[in-house]
Structures are given as structure tokens and as C-alpha cells.
Length: 183
Image (cartoon, rainbow, N blue to C red):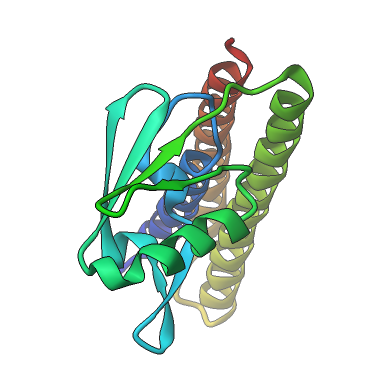
């Protein structure tokens, strides 16, 4: 695999990771991704909620959690409450209803700060991929496998990739911020 392909793959992975993280941030409407960070004590270990229950959204402001094993109802409830999402699950013996409360202005601003922090971590990861790609180019150049012109062209290409991926990340951030701030 070429150096450029390697760098592109690392940047793709970084961008996708940030987009997945963005999905866990609450926007006032219910999505199953909100509960991705919830861990449940089940069968002697911590498991992701989506491994022990199905999650659906029957309404815009309600999540429905249906455990595969009803004996885990209280553990699932505890997991949702301890996840720090500000959600209060209601257990009716069959399913767990999780109403999504509307966000107030202060909470929205906190989420925007959190999104900005996530995006910055993504930018750092993209720049790290660029640095590793440039180091690989320098090593190839030093070993005589790349001419100075080829090395310069490859380094320029890596920089263009970096700029493009950071722009894509910024677009995702702007869209998510708009979604969070929309009342």
C-alpha cells in the first residue's frame, strides 16, 4: 500500500470515529445512538446496551429499550441513569421507556463545547496521520527510494489530503452544532 493510501485510510478512520462520537451527543430528538455509551452489568461483565437489548424510537422524544433477557431490566435502568446523559428511564416490567427531555439553552451550549472538543481531537488525529505520512516519505527519500521531486509531490499531496479531511470534519461539526442549537 502506498504512503498516500495509508494516510488516506488513517484520515478516513479518524473522520468516521469523530462522526460516531458526534452521534452520541444529544440533540433533543431521540436516536438509538444516544445510548451507545451506556454500559450494563450483565452476565458478570460490562456490556454495551445494544448487546443486551434492542433500542427503538417510536416517537421523536422517546426511546424504547427492550431487553433480550427480562432479568436485566434493573441493570439496564441503572446503566442508563449512571451514564451521565441526564436521562430518567421508566421500567414497566416489559420494556424501558426513556423520554428525551427538551434541552435548555445552557445545556445546548455545553453540548456545542463538547462537540468542539471532539472535533479538535479529530483534527489532532488527522494531523498525526499527516506527520506519520511525511515521516515515511522522508525515510523513503533518505533510503534513495524516492527522488526529491517525488518526495515533494507526495508531501504536497498529503497536505492536500489533510486540508480536505479537516474541511470535511469542520462541515460535520457545523451541521451537528446547528442540529444541537435548533430548538
